Image (cartoon, rainbow, N blue to C red):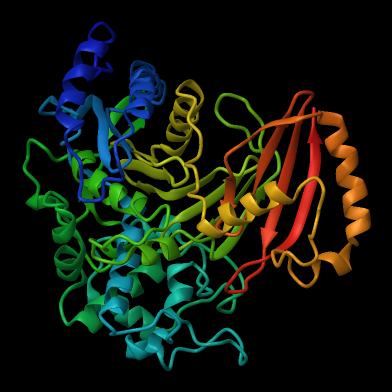
Length: 513
């Protein structure tokens, strides 16, 4: 029988307790406090808790833990059911779940930490660091060498290997090297296609071991987890406190059957990590700290630009023109793979970055929405529990109910300068050609006479201009502002050149009723 961690009658009471505990958990990567935004999100939390509970019950999860990270802190966390059925241990944000392939981005970050130390480059051939790869037969004579970037982005040419790879976790180093020496079967030549490879990440783990001179687990513990304060994230399940370790189960024949936990091994780099919501939220906060780009001091184990590099869509893998959010809203979705991370962008321009995880006994997912400054984490202890669906639903619900909007891009000085110059110039265009604010292409592309006639027609529709809006930036060199008249508004959209003193190369003036 399913036993909830938060009973419906106690949702508000327990939510309050959790918020008291976590609202002060501000990481070193806090991005500023927005009390209004936080209050709107907090109002949605009882609904969030109910969504997770209903999903856990529907899908027969023994236990579930979740957390919501907002602007650098774990704002809210909770748990339902049991992390250990035999001992009747309840799931919580401190319960330690195996997170499977969520481990991959940590391995990729380990590679970038070594690059930061000047010990490798991501476009280096992998055989420079794993010599056994040097003489391995290729699929074709014109196949390029496998690079580190190929391995990080699932472009090495290895076949999709989830069913097989999930049972390799405790494989020894010598077994991996023996497999390479014998020759790997390729599905493609490197660099041409996406194919999810756990083997590729095991090889990345070997690269970290060889380059750092210590087991990859030890290197990542020292280079990544220690600086982030992740003191309760481990690789080997026997090192976890018994009252915190989540046991994995398969729901079969109407009952839960415990799955045997696998020991750590050379394939741990693809899926071996064991962590809690409390600990992993620090990692999520670090990723969120990379957006937007700014000039503050870098505080993490890799630079913020390294994180943004990880978040890019390096290897396209899918376009779902009929994608539907869990609530039924249809919105096309494109997806790609970064460095140990999945990337998606929907029809509204909403970008998500994160990863799922699945192993016998466990399922997990984390995701950040960089433009909104929020991230979500969920773990369950049932075989291949699909957590992406509920996390996507919860994020979509929070954005809708809390009326969240993407972060406002700071307006550059040059955009404000060009805006003020245009406000003085329009609608007469007096001295425009000699003003020095337009690029050399501007008037040859469309003459001053034509531009003035077109803008006169627009200004005539709105009447007297009574106010000018603030500038809305799309980036540091492009955006728009509005001129607000008695009968309507005028949108003034401009794009600047790449020159040092950026000039206006494009200007669109349009009527808004």
